[in-house]
Image (cartoon, rainbow, N blue to C red; front, side, top):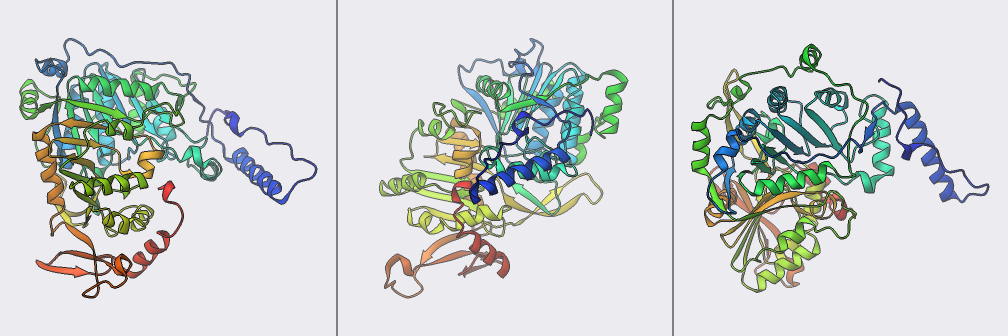
Length: 544
């Protein structure tokens, strides 16, 4: 701790109790009283301000290799490259950080302090040292242990860190109690998180999609990784992404560190050494592929040759979720054509609200074929999310949708570390859908109440049959018998005497090369199934 700064105003003082109190009033007073005690003991010296000055996306330098590469006659179309493999998604971010000459605007929900997180951060710090302005915007939910670390990074003259909806306390010592209490007593506000994931280089090329920054998102965690999806975007659409980033960066929900002392020269080098993010010219060697540094003209041309050029729209929620006049991501998506033939969905957490189920029923009646791939109990990394899905599963099947649950199958991962090859189990984390083999959405939004109504999200709708073909293959391969369980309602008898209520849920797939049918959650033990069943009966769907 340092500096002795006071806690934020919202935690100063307590209401004066009336002489006569009801039991409810007394309980409320005691709750506030103990909350204030916790803050008096635990409040740390982080002083935040959302008056750090407005800033805007920069016009890229005329010498920017990215600008020179993308400046081509394509009208208003933008170029896209799907990033399916974890290694290529990581390489794309590293290459952009290494090649940028003007600016990096970066926005994430999670940034882990692991191999990939540190390697990418090292490249970003290198960029700042060569004169690139860096704006790093992170959601505070998972950063309780990283406040001092981020405050140190913020001292570089060209690197600024801001946090979305930060708690008054970190997660060090007694502050953990204060942080937890704020989550409880200010739940409606603190539950609102920034789930966006965007990486923009020179206001020209960007990566957007479902991946956070951490080993498990790039196939580098030995016990469990995620099947995920990003897209590299180049051209006019990046200006919209930058404009949206500016809106978040300058919003009232975003706070920066206050009273910082800038560091340069030997002081900055000492900070990098102390924080163990020293310059590393070959951190890409985490993967057993070609080592990437700054993109050469030849490499840029190779990337360009793979781009699919198409019309699109970048979209995002307003950072101010209380703004009733703001157009939400869901509303922006609904402006695009509705499915007429088929609707293919992959969503890590799938808890459709009533309006989405009603849409499914309407589409089903009009002859639209709907297929949905989501996590199974075995592969889901959030038990509560699966419990919420369980409570909706019969309704989903009754809406006319074909339903598939991803199996946490093993994938082989190649690295340049000793051993070089290991098997890791992969859960589902991607968020994408395809409409009529032509319209593709890739972004951060799951089809659940949390993404639609609580968190902020971002994504991109792209009109391209060529891209739709690639993403359709990605999703349908995930629905294969070897990769997923097909979930159906069946009659245990030859005829269901009581109608739909007599139907049971059946999982069909392949095990050891043989087709099997199961009548309970596959590949999950008794206690895991029981816990999920119990949680599925709690009235918390709107919080998931």
